[in-house]
Every structure is written in structure tokens, then in C-alpha cells.
Length: 495
Image (cartoon, rainbow, N blue to C red; front, side, top):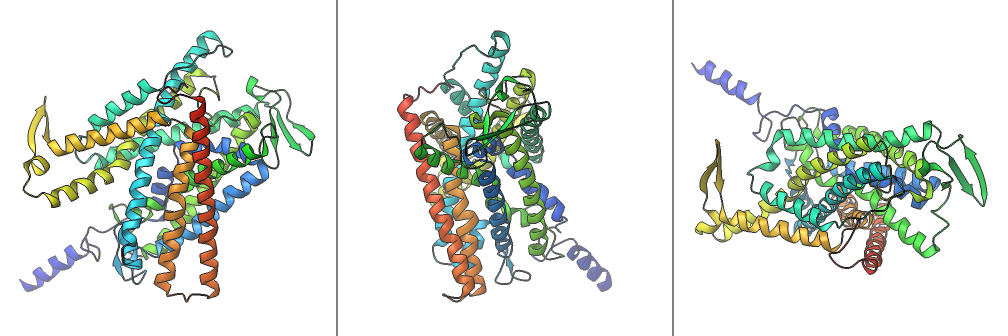
């Protein structure tokens, strides 16, 4: 009997990891798939515009630089999953826990502020992007029936309000972020519209778009007759951006472009979650940090190739007049049905992605409220009801608080609906603290690197450079928004 009990215990133990959770079955390939799915999104569509502001040499060099730095700091972060030892130490189940374990003090509160601010910014950005995509569908159909020379502009606010209304309803769905099919749909949609954008650009170049390389006034024409009207006479530049604008505007746009690249390439916010959260996340043997480092190499290599294809093909097609988003109405206009389909993909993706990014905020506020007022029926009471055969539990606090949050996000989106500037601001807010500062500081603390040592100086220099760069990007984004607001009335923006 005792032998049977021991065998049962051993059998159960073989199904559990060292933290008592079910055995993790993931590999470097599954982890890299999670990362790529999270990164390939609406930000990719702005990379062609970023390339147009930087020129071929600087644009490609900076994309590679961001990829290398991202890989280096992501590997530092992978070692912080367990503390104090990266192989046998206690697991940290979230980014904030890793900061608390390695840095102590109140740094995890600073990390929380940065994380939640970034999530609010993403919610605003998703609202703006979705509304612009709906307007684009209307404009593309208008151009198809009336010709591309026709002029039309639509007020964006009704679509922002419509998106906000849908999100208020979706916000009441319990455990929305745990619906397994949501990740699958999001992955299909994001790869769908990103691939359509890249595919259209590549097809345009292959079928004969005119590319002009301009350097010191010398033009070299590659390929022959342009395939589409957008390719006629559009120059691309080896160095810097368009020579049409003033040097000051070029500099502002280059900084905004860097912010777009930073936003598109960053994934530190979810890196530690991938190492532990789901059963298909990383198994314990071989050590998670080593497997995660391999996943970082695979995913970042894939990402940089995909980014360069999207950026270079888009820039080659539109030249210095590359639009902020190649799938918007100022970009491709035919085939209209494919552009419409891509924008439908964007809308569907961001409807779900919005909920994914706001659920941590909802959870944090509701947990704090429940702990603060444990006996309140308004905060903690749940009232069952049904719609047809579907059963739900209604919380009045959740209904009121989540609705107010979505309404505030919607109002902010209507106040500043500027695509590239918003992406740059989000990049500045999230990339430096989450991808550079905290991984570097945690590594220094964990390795006990002495102040003044060569490695300490190198890491601090890296952190300082990207801090200054992020501040410059944030200033450029705010300047861009200010310039745009001078042209448009508040809450009266037309796309």
C-alpha cells in the first residue's frame, strides 16, 4: 500500500514543475511564436514612413541597431526570471515581480506606473488606429467609384465613439484576456494585414515601380516604367530624409521615426510572462533562461527581416511621399477589395487587442478596490443574469469603473488622433524604461557589478544614451502633436 502511495505521489510530481504548477511543455520555437505574434501589429505599417524620414543607410542601420540592443537587453531580462540564481532561484511571475526581487525598495512601483501608463497609451493608440482604418475603408471605396483624383474627407469622431461603445460592452465580458481563441484570431489578423501591406509593396517594386536613389544631387533610376501612379518620379534618399522639408522638420520627423521603430520592436512587457504563464510556455529543462535566449534570437531575427521587408518595399514604392501607414487612403488605393480586407483585419485585431492591454489595468484597480472595501456590496457584489442561454454575473463597480475608463480613453483619442506622433510617444514611454533601464539595473544588481568597473560604465552608458534618445523622441512627438493641433480644431479632426 505504501509503495502504491509513493508511486502515486511520484506520478503527480512528474506532472508538476518546481513551483507546483503544471509541467511547462514549451520550447524556444513556441516562445518565439508568442513574441512574433505580439510584435507583428499595426506599428509595422509605419516602418515604411520611418524609413522615408531616415533614408536607406540610416534607416536600415538604426533598425539593425535597435534589434541588436533589444536582443542584448532581452537576454539580460531572461536571466531575471528567477532570483537570485537564474537557474535554481525563485520564479518571478511578472515583470514587476522581477523588478521587486532584484532592485527592491519602491522601484516596482515606478515599474508599475510605467507599465500601466504604457497600457493606457496603447489603448488610446488602438482606438485612433481602428477609427482611421474604418474611415480608410470608406475612402478607398469612394476612390474606387469616383477615381483616385476625387477629394473626400470624413470626420473621425463618430468612428472613435463607435469603437468606444463596442469596447464598453466587451469590457464587461469576464476573463476576456483568458479566451484562448482570442490569441489565435489576433495572430491571424495581424499577420494578415502586415503581409498584405508588404506584399503590395513588393509586387509594386517587382512589376516595375521607379526607384530613384538620390545622393548629392545625382539620380540613378533602377527598374523601368512605373507600375502605379504612386511610383512616378518619387525619389528615395541614401542619407537623411526628404530634402523638401526644412532641416528642423527633418530632424523632428527623424526622431518620430525612431519612436515608431522603438514601438514596433519592443516586447519586454510580455517577455517574463511568456517564460511562465501558460502550459505552452517554457519548460524547466533545459533552463528557462537559456531557452528564452534562444527564443529571443529566433524571434528578433525573424522580426528584423520582416521589418526590413515592410520598410524597404514601402519606401521603394512611395519614395519620400511615403504615408504614415501604407494601408491608409494616402497609400495604396487598388486593388480596393484587398485594401478593404486589410483594414477589416486591423479593426478585428485591435478590437480584441484593446481588451488584452486594458485587462491588467482593470484587474489592478478592482483588486485594490476589493481590498480597500471588502464589505461593500457595490464593489464586491455579483448579480447573476442571463441573455438567452448565456449566463453572466454583473458587478456594478465593474460596470461603472470600466465604462468610465473606456469613455476617458475615447475622449483622449478624439482630442489627439495623430497616428505617427502617438506611436512615437508610446515608443518613447515604453522602450527605454522597460527594454533598457530596468533590465540593465537588474543585471547590475544581480551580478553585483562594482561602480566604476568597465562593464558598469558600459551598461550605464547604454542606458544614458537611450534615455536621452527617448527624451528627444518624446519631445518630437509632443511637438508633432502640437503642430497638428494648430491645423485642426479639437474634436473636429477629419481623415
